[in-house]
Length: 460
Image (tube, rainbow, N blue to C red; front, top):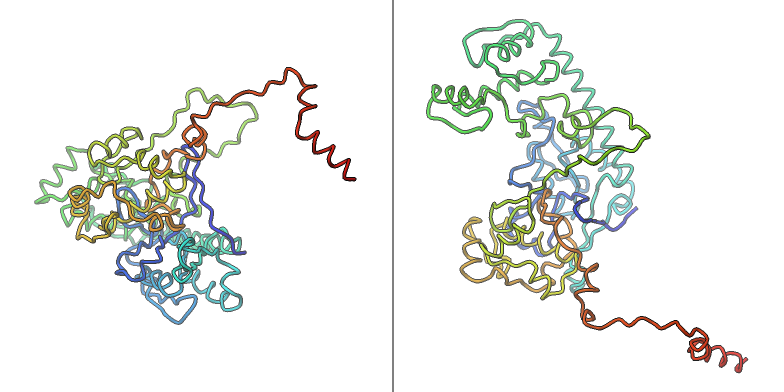
């Protein structure tokens, strides 16, 4: 079952096999805090687990390593994942999409005790072109394996059933009691009375009551934000309650931010399908596809913003980003590509390498470590290391196939050197002369093949 991990990027489209760990064979001698246990996002923010509410008793559940007796509370899952990578070189893909992580680990602990780990995991060899003593093998456990996919779907289905049961209990509960967050009115009975009141009287609409689960925890979470003088929508903090209320009223911020993933666990839609957010589920059209051809004349592509390698500058135009990096930071990716004759996948690895080094506050040219990103950027500029790259073997490694940032649109804009080689290679100035086929008889008589055939006949 073991196979090499493949990554494919085609023009305008990124198709990634996400991996929850970016691996470097030299990282074992560095501080453990530099390990990246989840793909990063623009803007950088910690990934959240859908379905984990703040008061969940499961946080104290102990999870045991699949390959040894090491264990950790579920609330310290990252520490266990780090143990798997550092000690056993085992990487679990898309951890945040696993519905019941303890059950998942228990299942694979039993299976790996029965069969070799290579029967279930893809094998990734790092530093493949380096010395043998520096080569390492990492194991990737992901849903490409049918057994793993079935397990994840089973855990997802079981969690969905539990969530639906929880939702039904809340819908039938008549012992709900709470004071409105915006006034002193008290509500008893069903939760819908309070939610409908806030929507009707205070224009604060969190959706239909039947779409909400863990309602008490949800309201507690919102109340804690207000108690901390924080706007529920823009999440800015104010000096007093009066200023906060005026801000939310004038700016029409009496609503929650739909892009804030910390609210996902309170909406039933986020539990429906494995690996899909509420936006993806909501955007799907369940109508049957018609046989007749669709009219795509008014179709417009959703704009994708690329982010600068060195700062937070964004643009929907890739050329503007390239120009910005060249004029502002002195970094010319096109020049590096030409001088080093970088193929497409080498460009991918170079971008991911620079992203990772800067994220970890380390100069990618001289490897000097700094305390913050502004410091390392300032060093790169002042020391003239912008266009200074280390030895190719440092960054041209298989682990940099995997993107440092899962939504890195800059990777989509990289040009395919292989397809351009006929125009940019060493033979670009050699003229191509068409073969004259006006006299086929003469060509046949003088052809090298004719001489070969004659020599073959004479020898026989």
